[in-house]
Image (cartoon, rainbow, N blue to C red; front, side, top):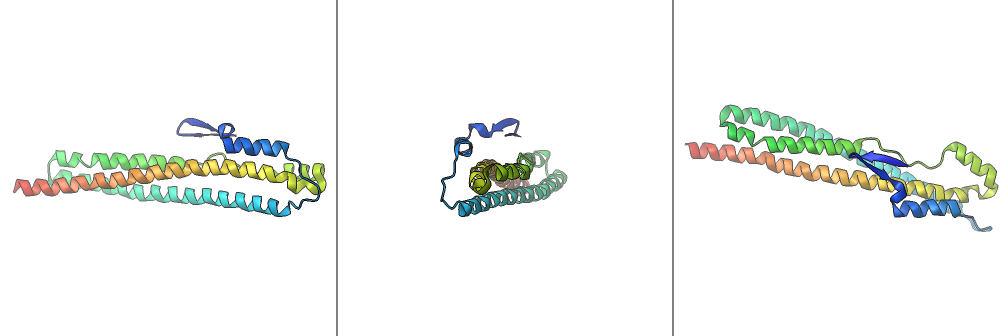
Amino acid sequence: MTFNLLGKPFDFGIDADYIAAQEKAHSFEPIDGVDYQWVFEYAKQSYDHTYGVSGHLDDKADSIIKYLGAFSGLSAFLAAYIATSTTWEVALSVIPAFCLSISAIVIAARARRVLDQAAPPSIEAAMDYAEAYEEKASATFVPQIWAATVAMEAICNTKGRLIDRATNIFLWAAIALALPLVSSILWRLLDC
């Protein structure tokens, strides 16, 4: 399973945790007499939790995009105001804030972009497991859910890093937006 992020392929096959989960999924044989039902329930809850984190990260990225869209509009408005009331040098000082905010929007949008969802095996595969393993089916299915959870964690980590990067760039954009205000005020004070 692969997905493309920022133009670079991400291959779960190189992730050590995913490799370990896949190896366990292919080699696992349940031991007779061991109750795996609670492990199966725990695996499902872990996957559901990780999937929920992915949705929460998507919501954060969406919020950043909305804030930055408004911030970009504010930057453009400020540039127009400063351009009409001071010199063009001061007006140009808004450009870094605008560029940083656009960069942060792009990064947040990439975090929001739908990536391969690491899903547990299909319902058809579950039926095949049930028929092939009978009473041991849910036990043999646990490593499959674990592998999907590990892959989803990798997706969440990638989204989290992108959201963190977009947030940091947003903070730099806010700082950069303060520069034209300060320079405009100083320009007026020195011009008097």
